[in-house]
Image 1 (cartoon, rainbow, N blue to C red):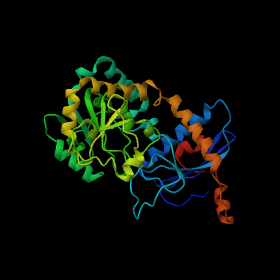
Image 2: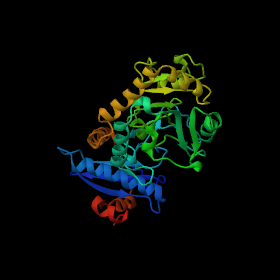
Image 3: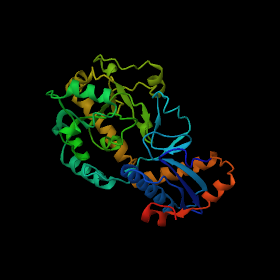
Image 4: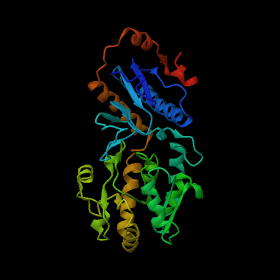
Length: 345
């Protein structure tokens, strides 16, 4: 393996004797990528520091951008999203927890612990039946513009929806949990908001996910067409069917998949309102699994990282380096030093 210099957003790190070293980091990263890199390295270091047994020595290529690159550890990988000229097929991406599992430096989010505590306070004081019966969404319309613009066109200003772009005002992540129905939209690739919505005892509504994150396999969707509300969710299309092969009954589901043109969104909300026990069951199963099951806890995150390191180290191979590359790789900086200035010394 040798990723250094293959593109912005690739970070190379080494685990040696259960210590973390930084081999390569892109210079002059924009603030959002620097935050992503720092939070991810904090996660990795915590997993090493608290490991009850030594982890294997290995070298990791970490992709800290939204798009995974080459053979790397990344935040997401395609489920059925088609590659294009700028982004060839990704077949060897290992999934790591999103950087926000440490923290997201936004006044609307903050640390994972802060968000979880704020959601808990709302859920403890509000039953499902007491929640706002509208479907809610906030987001930047320019990302995945067609999908999001169509959502705003279909649902914006409607009595059954609280849908608007971020230009109209953001919302703290815990605020979404005050609504019965929450919409998840992917952006350029995935959206880092997913896990915060899944903390809610609310019904998650989305088109079929085209990008997978490290806990996406736990989603059990019922398709809106199976509720008898029409729509054009391509459940038999090759990509969607391969990514989401199981058709769950409403009584089993923890999410609802609708059409990407949102043509069945209003009918889906109406059906759920007419079947409140089913809607509450979907919402409850989501929160009980992801929060009650501990999947969003620091313990689960560190355990996942350790399994990821073991799996990666069992298959990775390091290509021989030329002399000048060997000299460059000779520089490695302990994480504790790198964290002070985000530079290799």
